[in-house]
Image 1: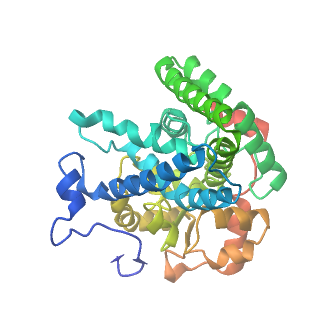
Image 2 (image 1 turned 90 degrees about the vertical axis):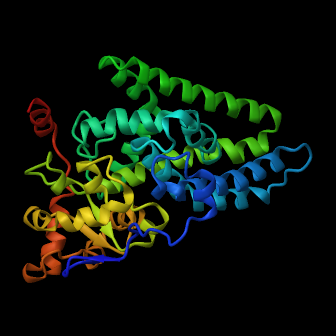
Image 3 (image 1 turned 30 degrees about the vertical axis):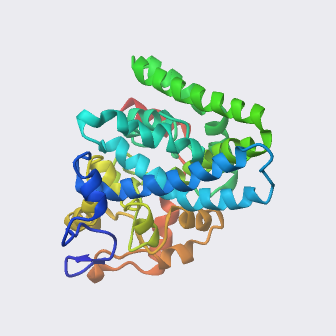
Length: 355
């Protein structure tokens, strides 16, 4: 728990253990920051569960369709923590330089079991998204869409599913980043090759382990990005204080390594996930001035659903008034939400790009 006297945050912060545990004794000398030992724990759990489950289902004569929903339930439960572990270790390398080969384990081995092709996330997120910051050149920009429209959401996710790889490859090659482009191609081809081999070996577990998670993961990633960048100030779309959502005191933050602190992450992508609550408190006065969008006790997927259902008043109940003395009314919050959901027309987008 951490507080500045006005806002109290219950999301994870660093608390040094009284004595070193088994994980630190075994892995502490291998990793760069002992605060990231939860990634080691999660990696071991995922290896045990999904490695065993996949091996069992592919064993000749063993697979039964009742196994599929169990595997998918486990996949969905662990997908969020895995993606955010991947996210954090893309920004901050987990293992020390002398053990750098171990850094490939999370994207190249564990990713296979949750529908995440190796390298594509890194290239898209680090090489493109953070460089463009949801502005028009960002391939996953939400600006051309009405962010409470399900029809616009379908256009958005369809473009990513069917054109995402091609657009990302062309983006990287146009900018002379051919090495990143080839990393993406290598990861995609590796995943597809494994999927084909699995389907030829036994198509039923192949569908369960490779096909369904692949499509589902990509759809869920785009749902998350949509909610992260749903609220864009039409008067100041380049200002992260006014274009990136934050949520605090959420169960999701405990499971997914403080992923709710997305605004602070855009300001400082290498900020450690346990330092994010303190960073928000440090920025609170500026966030008040900028009318930053902060919610409590919800997550990106709840925000997405409320937007699709146009339940603005329910969403407003989760809004955090960072300045109790100047608290917004429910109607003012709803008006602010609606204003920042408006899509940008072609002429305005062109002007932003030119600037």
